[in-house]
Amino acid sequence: MPERVDCLVVGTGPVGMVAACALAQAGLSVGLAGPEALPDRDGRTVAILDSGVKLLASLGLWGRAQDVSAPLVEMRIIDDTGSLFRAPPVTFRASELGLDAFGQNIELTDLVAQLKRVLKTQNQLQQWPETVSAFRRRDDGLMEAALSSGTIIECRMLIGADGRYSKVREFAGIQSKDWHYPQTALTAIFSHERDHDDRSTEFHTRTGPCTLVPLKGHRSSLVWMMAPKDAERWAKRSPEEFARAVERQAHSILGKMTIESKIGLVPMAGLSTDHYAKDQIAVIGEAAHVFPPIGAQGLNLGLRDIDSLLKSLNKGMDQNALQRFDADRRRDVKTRTMAVDLLNRSLLADYVPVDFARGAGLMAIGSFKPLRQFVMKRGAGF
Ligand SMILES: Cc1cc2nc3c(=O)[nH]c(=O)nc-3n(C[C@H](O)[C@H](O)[C@H](O)COP(=O)(O)OP(=O)(O)OC[C@H]3O[C@@H](n4cnc5c(N)ncnc54)[C@H](O)[C@@H]3O)c2cc1C
Image 1 (cartoon, rainbow, N blue to C red):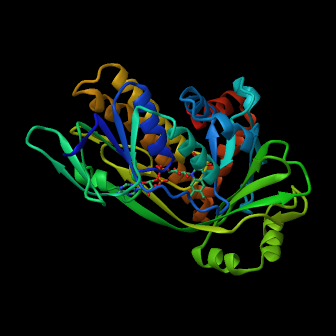
Image 2: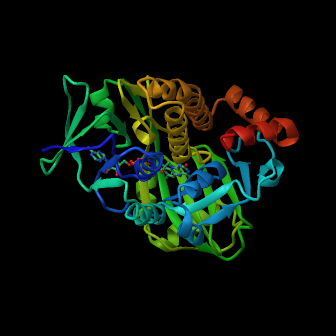
Image 3: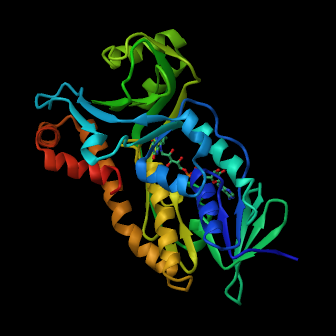
């Protein structure tokens, strides 16, 4: 006999786990399928914006994450391209939006561990710690997912949170376009001499941004984008040499730095889809959109997918719910994918008119409060 749920969520990354919990709390019988392993502790953190933290808290998912996360009160951008049209540093302050903090920065492993802990307590949610190997649509309109153990789960709604190479997306016939950037991100966690004052600093360099994001205490996480060959070379150097290089790149704003984690290497890529839902199947998180880690947008967009899914279902659990979701996601996802792509490519361009436009843009944002507030609101997902 097949197992039966109203809605099957495929993928146990942060987006899949939050979505499964949210849908179960909305009253659906929900299944969650995906491997149980925790992500590697490779220095990768995620800055979750205020709206995302509020969503997690409202679902009872934030709890102990508060103890291992750090507030992000200010975000500073420093043009370090050496361009002729370099703009002065721009600082965004959460207080300008009436917030205590833009959000919270947390190690991805700690976030996933916290989500797993809470999910185990959700009675209305069935979990299968296995990958889905095949899907089938039946004549009666229901869908079937076959797990690696051979178990069959039938459902009337399928949510793909199965990441960039999503099988759910393929099964739904949702077309996607992917691309690569000539960049790899180096990730690591550092302790440092000086206080970060709850401020992240994004140095815009010719190879991409180099960002330091506050963690608890005198600690910060690093995302440094550069040419893949250079990233591989740095990852092989001694921890001391790498720490010196980061300190130099950060102009010693945090004083002496000491590496505390493994070094992670993430090749930079992008992905966009032509739809977010089709025939009772929706895709969310990196199954629907991937872009480089600039301005803390990736997971936050995934959390907004979930919020939108809940709102669409709240208007009626009918055949049109996922169409409403599809229409709602278009503008938000497309604008952010384009904005991040443009900013990243403008750094790599080394072309005078592009430098001028970027410098003038940053200068305008820095000196004109209403524009700065508009950018902050859009960035924070208001
Ligand atoms: C260096 C770096 C820094 C970042 N910093 C930030 C940040 O500060 N703020 C922010 O918002 N975002 C950030 N991001 C983006 C964020 O990390 C991602 O958007 C987010 O982790 C994606 O989560 P996801 O659940 O959509 O996908 P994934 O984490 O990829 O999860 C997909 C899951 O699906 C499972 N799966 C795949 N196939 C199957 C199958 N057939 N059956 C079952 N399960 C399957 C996989 O095992 C995996 O567990 C950053 C990204 C990088 C690379």
